Length: 405
Image (cartoon, rainbow, N blue to C red; front, side, top):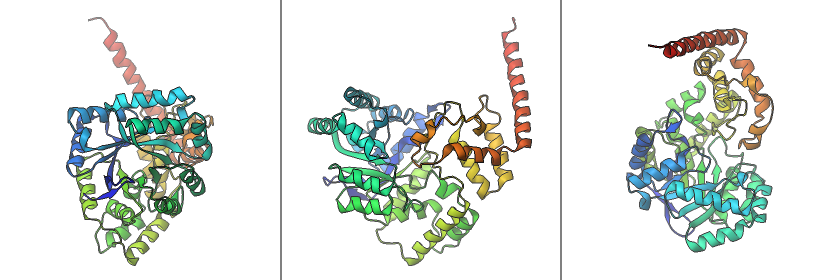
């Protein structure tokens, strides 16, 4: 494993473990599986673990794993204040204390203001006394480094960056988002101030691996350096000295081992002109095929009407890559037989999802488009018939179970 230093000279592994996408077993995180993956990563030298208050069950699972495996002293914990939920000064302490309890610790090495999208969000925290609160927590040792995670445009990122003496920041950045959100300009602005940058969504929610268009796949396969799509995307990031750590939501031991291997071999500046030309060609292939720039982060969820927004957008994008017929069939399989309906047509345009979308997607209109593509009349009829049959079967089983012996 290789390391790059924070502002105080402390080494951070260039590969961080993103804990938002722990594997679930039903609605609960599969702690035993997550523990194996974390132990594999930590034994390989990963020392930066990222979670957040709103990542369902993640903080609790992480606290349990680190305690029972006696790994807390070998890692740096990063978690985030849900600033969009904070309405009072007391609420700041309430959330922080709850996070310490969940994580079974008395301090957080890297604490972030979660998902700042505009100056107003940061100003609201300042009005509640967050600057004084940060100083107190750092003085007590409860927080070692303070930072913010960001989703917004480049100019806003730079404004927030310059408004406080941050210890680090976290941005969405990959070869597809090189000019959007904070972008390369924001990355270099942070580096110029000596502020470490943590990268999230390096593979854009898996899109840069699992949902590449055929033309892009062919380019990567033809590349003489024989890199996998994930390896290419990660090395593109680590090639840049301004980047301190890249988070990966690893959910298999194999993935952990592969990413750790790449992180141990990569070198700054190893990309040559042909590599950059390959990346630019892949960008163009993706732009031609993408319908919606969704990363499946889940911030839009839960929908008050039950719409499964990320899944709808996943198959909508898939329709442009593998064809409408394939996407429709797979969507019908994935969604059609759920007990609770989760279709885009259930959207009532309340707009709640759009307030939380880091990508700024026009979710309401894109759900209409997704519904048209994924659920034409024959599929709606077929799904309704299948659901009716399934629900009748469930009712018969329930009635039979209620019968006296």
